[in-house]
Image (tube, rainbow, N blue to C red; front, top):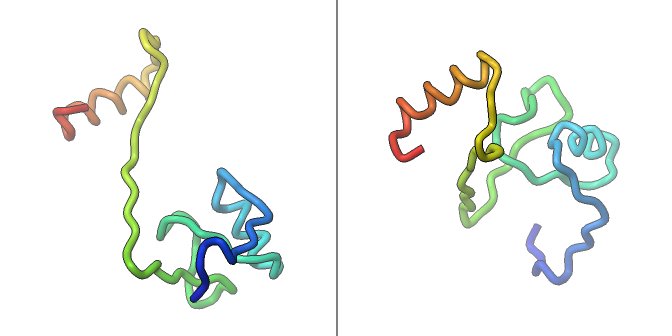
Length: 87
């Protein structure tokens, strides 16, 4: 954007990139998010541009202590613990 952060005018925040993409498609601004979360093919009106310098963010999985899970989340947790021993 070639601007200092203090010069940027942030008018909205979002927790679902898809919702922000709808506003960006309508020309209401830009959406910043991780690559491959929304569809940005050549046929669409949106494109992905990486930030420079590269920015990276970690991800976390958080759940309620002593949570009782149904079968699907329980299987997910088991697989995650297999793949990531520090989990």
